[in-house]
Image (cartoon, rainbow, N blue to C red):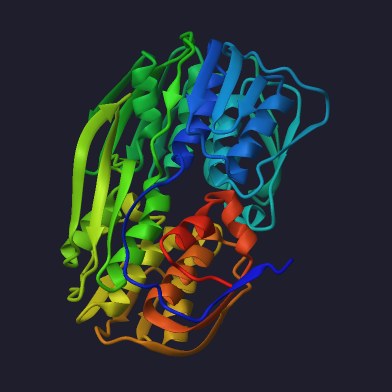
Length: 441
């Protein structure tokens, strides 16, 4: 079976409504928190991607009882510090930085050595940013210069810490929050603005958390040793997955799309704010709140006139997973778009800032790439008419899916490798593309 797709035709106009699978960040966080609750927790619309399945497998290896069927899942937790495991345990985080980093926060309280490994892509990513704060709780680590594989040896006497998270990493912040759950006393976190799913979940569960919001950072206080009640969660659709269909619609001709029941948490909708500044017609409807999260239907239409943007850096963290798609929109915009302070993009599954430039170069779009910024010289009349091959991108699911959107909207004959990469985050991506009329061979 071939592990690539070919695109030779742009997608025809469409006017449809779709639903996207559950939010990956919430799916993983629900599973980890449910493992610490006292009793049975149940989720529906759980994302069945490799990242989430690896989370469940790691929890099973830690003695947690889990029943999973279709898009529902039951986890029977036994409370804080209730993991049990065999000696010389190895946990495989696969491609998931969220799983690899967050689960370390829960393992701070276990003295036996536990090894964490990942795939080729995850093994290139920086874990020193989470090792350093977790050491302060009392845990010890052995690592490959701050990269996987990593062995963690926890402590029975974890101490609360004061931690300054200055990278805007929700993963680092959340790992410290999870470590604080089972630590006596108060842990203090000063965190640069980033996704706040963990904070909202802590609040929903009635845990002892206080958040003082400042302009550029949050001050978070967590009192540990509070029991967690079991909880059910109907997980809303993922905005990062929805983004591919939003941009597909924006760049297609005479098209309109509604995406139902999407998580529009303000820390996640940077792409919507950026696209609106670029002239895109986006509406949020049927707005509601659910367990602290904000949910809405997203309606988007094609745009013939797109404006260049000097992107405010304050939107970076809220759009960090969507910049490859935003670069495609900038390629069709009138004028020069400028995106800066994006060094974090090169610390993802692949060096995404570099890959964004590569894709633009292959399409014939002039761009100037620097260490943490890119200028894109848009062409409103862009129509690609050549063969383009996309490969050797560390099987980064977002590089693959962005390339598919480019091929279906901007023209050209595309051959894109590693279609199995979508299994990490969005296994039904190709079938949903086909449901809108996209022809992939």
